[in-house]
Length: 144
Ligand code: HEM
Image 1 (tube, helix red, strand yellow):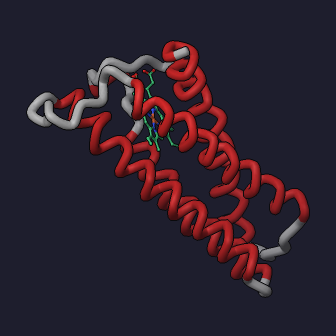
Image 2 (image 1 turned 90 degrees about the vertical axis):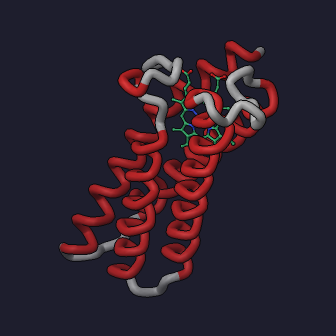
């Protein structure tokens, strides 16, 4: 159960990153271009939102069962990363992406719709990239 969750959470990062990169490229180029908002755009932005929310659910489950989470071992960089830094950075990123999606959905002007996704998803993407435990950071995590 624990191993399955870690692999699902680790592997799903690639789908979430792919969708986020795609959304940011489409939204920023349309914001700077003709701005036309299509049903395809709406679906791409929605699936991206769903993928990060799925990561949130898997991450929350892991937070309660992972041996790498221990709030009383803050002097150790691995425990500190998973117990505080990873969850905080990812929560802020997911909140920003959620705000971007809902504000874009409510906006009436199509250029504004693209701009909101471009900015909020863009900042969310940078935060997610910064808080992923990439192998070179020696935090005991792999690539899949
Ligand atoms: C888009 C958001 C997120 C991404 C891309 C992401 C990505 C990752 C990756 C790549 C790992 C390493 C898995 C491995 O060992 O190979 C990991 C571990 C972990 N993540 Fe996340 N994460 C996200 C959000 C969250 C959130 C919101 C939480 C908590 C609520 C969370 C909790 C954890 C925990 C506890 C671990 C350690 C699992 C273990 O190895 O025991 N993650 N995450």
